[in-house]
Amino acid sequence: MKPEDIKRSENKVYCKPELLNDTPMHYCPGCSHGVVHKLVSEVIKEMGAEHIAIGVAPVGCAVFAYSYIDIDWIEAAHGRAPAVATGAKRLNPSRLVFTYQGDGDLAAIGTAETIHAANRGENIAIIFINNAIYGMTGGQMAPTTLEGQVTATTPYGRRVDLNGYPLKISNLLAQLPGTCYVTRQAVHTPASVRKAKAAIRKAFENSLAGHGTSVVEIVSTCNSGWKMSPAKSNEWMVEHMFPEYPLGDLKNDTER
Amino acid sequence: MAKVIGAVEINHERCKGCDLCVVACPTDVLSLQPKEVNNRGYHYAYTANPEKCIGCASCALVCPDACIEVYRVVEK
Ligand SMILES: Cc1ncc(C[n+]2csc(CCOP(=O)(O)OP(=O)(O)O)c2C)c(N)n1
Ligand code: SF4
Ligand code: SF4
Ligand code: SF4
Ligand SMILES: [Mg+2]
Image (cartoon, rainbow over all chains, first blue to last red; front, side, top):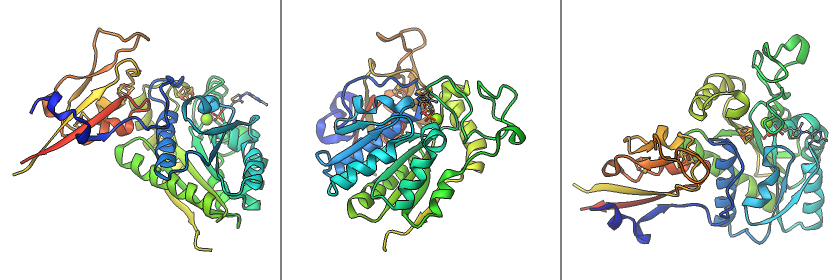
């Protein structure tokens, strides 16, 4: 069979998600943000939620998420996405409300908003892209940066005596009674992409069902900030990030 | 025995030449253009060995820019 005969619509098994529009994404080649954008788009479409979804975009590389995924969006000030999402969800309880945030946004400047929204058990989903760095501003240390990790502001590697320990904020959030589902995923292999998608689906369903706050941390790469190729970044992530941020569910308590 | 054959269609202009699909493909179908670039200057991915494709969609799943469409047929 020739490729032209195989490439018929009835044989199509994968294509660009419908809600992801044709605007080229500004992310660096190989950036994890793009993969997660695809998953968010696919899940919302599969749930038939494109008209009731409200995303809250962060400050960070994902600041333009609203340009790529065709749903309703609100752009929040740096770190304030969970507070904005709180308002959106309380005023529109039937909507699927989620934030999309980096580790600088969620675990540095926005720590208070993150923890208090989760502690109030707001019925929102939080998609948390943890690439252990401030990607957008040129690769500075974040609270999540690993011990010894070289960044623009830790040229000799992060020192815990100076800078403290990598902040495992998902573990903190899992302790709060307001969270119903906290999970850590990745998108570096086909299998992990499928699992991350199922996690995002569960988090979005929790928002609609009113179970409380869901957190899906995606352990991610920032190949520009890390100064490695995308493929090498994935290897580095497996070797160095996964021991510090192990994948799997930290909490799954949606039957309350 | 039934044989699964696949084919992929790559949106060359959307591609950023990140190489992740090339690494993910289990059957060495894909390669980056060694010299050619697209309109934005990237060495885009292309099907160097299209006949080897099994339509597994591994390449498409990991592509951050949603450039790859996958087709699959089961030949009896
Ligand atoms: C109030 C305020 N402080 C600081 C900044 C600068 N700034 C922009 S993005 C960013 C951090 C982004 O890092 P992260 O949230 O991890 O997102 P990434 O780019 O890594 O996805 C900072 C500090 C800002 N825009 N606004
Ligand atoms: S700087 Fe890092 S997080 Fe930002 S787009 Fe580039 S690779 Fe992605
Ligand atoms: S569908 Fe599978 S076999 Fe075909 S190019 Fe993609 S990864 Fe390779
Ligand atoms: S993964 Fe996508 S963007 Fe990267 S080289 Fe392959 S087709 Fe291009
Ligand atoms: Mg970051």
